[in-house]
Length: 327
Image (cartoon, rainbow, N blue to C red; front, side):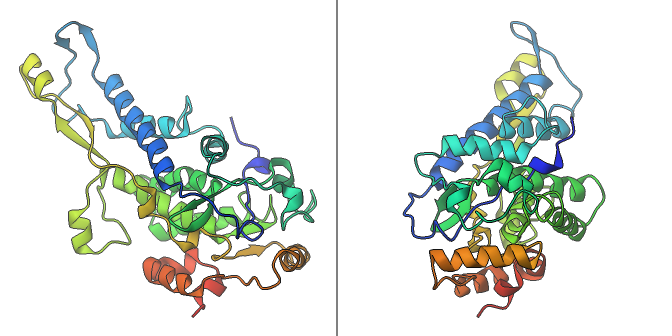
């Protein structure tokens, strides 16, 4: 099944909702995805080691107990809550799931009440078909739940390119910008979201930390030495005793925490959007003035400075020019 290009992208309005008070969703997001990660680990183990009869383990050759490709596949299926790891609109499905799961702490704004209400079907077909994604607050940062879809789905593609396709991280960043200029942005919504790119990049960091076989690109030497992977291949004492030889399986190494990835670059009210043409930009700018005449993007210039420091050499691929130059 090939996803239709007209329904890939979702957008949010970070201006109209800026003064809405929302509870912190960090713990809720962590709970949802740590449960899914645990299910993925369990399923990878279940499919790798089967029990034919009580007390009799099916054994595999040393080094094959922990199948990395199987783990990645089962983690994706569990995280996306899907029967497949690849087909379909995985990021959008996470977006839809979280709109329900986080409804108590999120804010839903109808498209017709947003700054994008004047973008017509020809200018932004996906925007009009899918409406807006919901917004949540994580440690004071206002983000769309669509960003978590980008984090896990497009983040996997970045990671896959670098880890398995012999591409560089810069190749992955270029792929992300190309998609945001096409199917994920300009071509379908009329909007280029730099915050989407930030979420994609951090999602790559998440997938890299699953087994942590490569250093995190934003961490220093000491931090990388001290970092713990989310999943480890560990000896199973009881199963090894029953089998009479070493038996290994996947176990949780450390818990996922979305707060380790979130920063102001995820916020479209700070890491500003670009638009497909001046007409769309003018329509949005007018509505922004109607909602808040004093609003300027970036809204927190000091936060942009912190994002520039955080992303270092990668900042120019992830931050809007106005955020790059904000002082």
